[in-house]
Length: 374
Image (tube, rainbow, N blue to C red; front, side, top):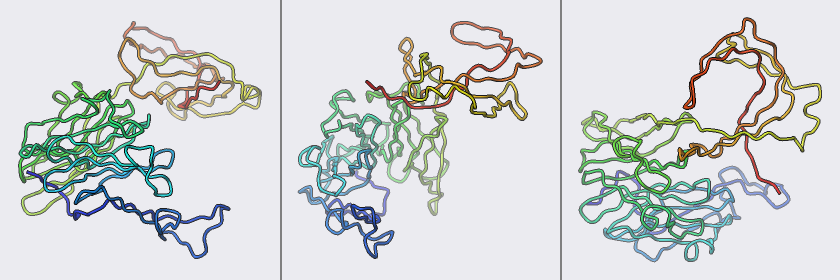
């Protein structure tokens, strides 16, 4: 049974419209162009349609890559026989010939397959999520594509993953990739108009994440007659938020659920080095900053940032993995006052429990990025 919780009509083609301010190469605005005008540099008068050759083709999710190319995911087909469908466009709206076949990709997972959400990973791989039906049972469906549109063999089985949550209608509606690369899909699970919010988390290879819920799955009854998740987001602290609807017996209400993400901090390896780009940074006048922490408290302490000392990068220690491969720490030597009286703290790690008498701050570590250069 094919069920869609949507009010949007089925369209015959995928439609992309760019409503942007148009600019000439010299930087001057086109005469009379205003915000919201169709962009004449995109497609035909700002409009693009793409025919997949099927009776129906429906775009459901769009992402702009870092290089400006536009990816649209949805489905194509008819009458209970649909496939995941992706299209990638160049910045001018033309089909990107380096992607799939002439810019298009279709993927068959079962009798009816609908991609409803999509995300581009930091490595450029594309993850499309939705659901797949064998004609009687619907399951969560995920497909990961390489940057050229080919199926990623390192993900699931030949790039594809399906997950049965045990109900007739298990439909994925929204996908997000955490900073550690794990993939979270939200949707609903149930039968007919008696459904619950459903959430599944996958490891980077598409396997279910056993550290999340029960075997990677969570089903939440909000308390109404019928409910489901339509969008998912991950907070900076790793908690997962799902938004959707809940039917109270007479009408739908907004529904919002937040889950613990099980986030844990990374381990870091720190390299000592020499600042080649700013060799005079460690000369006076130094940069003064105020720091408030759990040791000093109150109004904090004024310190002087003197010189770059360490670059710390997250590491996979003994196979424990990396949560956020982009979270680097850049540590500067600082000059601060001695603490009086000297507080004592007890610290505990997997190596030992230690007791410290604190004297004065030596380093200030701030988030930063790194780029390997020759």
